[in-house]
Length: 245
Image (cartoon, rainbow, N blue to C red):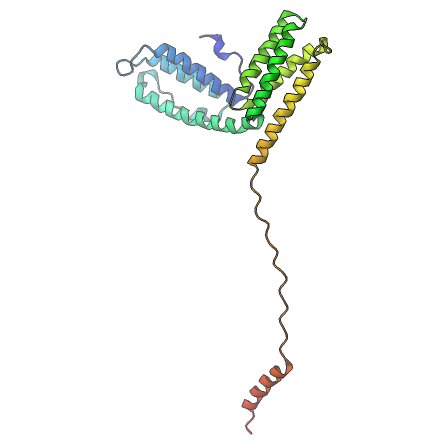
């Protein structure tokens, strides 16, 4: 079993599980791709995938571990495997939706103008870095971060952590070549402002429409008191009915 399956996992348990499950699935598909399940079911490879996935869920403390049903290999066939896969897909979908909603707080959709401006800045900074007199490994690290940044600009949603990785890497270079890297400082300030502007505009759009203000009705007019003559007349009329003469 390759140790690479467990390398570079994020600290977040749910994210780590999703990555591991995908790696286990890919490894399973490589081992079973030559088999036709209608002709032969490679139970040992599918059982390995099921056990790995369930063990990862258990080790990472995910609550749905107890809900995953793994039969003994003697009872494992295509239909029983599909039951396991159906159960697992239910929980994977829930995790993906939850993480997507959570991660949206740390991403932003860049508008066309912002993408163009940032890409222009990236091209300029790349030329500066190539001319900068620094160690080759530092230049390579900074260029790699810059390439990642350009790839991120082209994505549907721009992730903050990619921008943070670039700024952290650039900070080391700035400490040694501050004067020559002044354009990079301007670039960082400019891009940060653009990202903030796009995120602010996005948040404004998603704010709920305020409910219409309730109109306060005017105070009701006090009812006019009955006129004395009417009241007296009514009294007089009632009394007249009771007087026998």
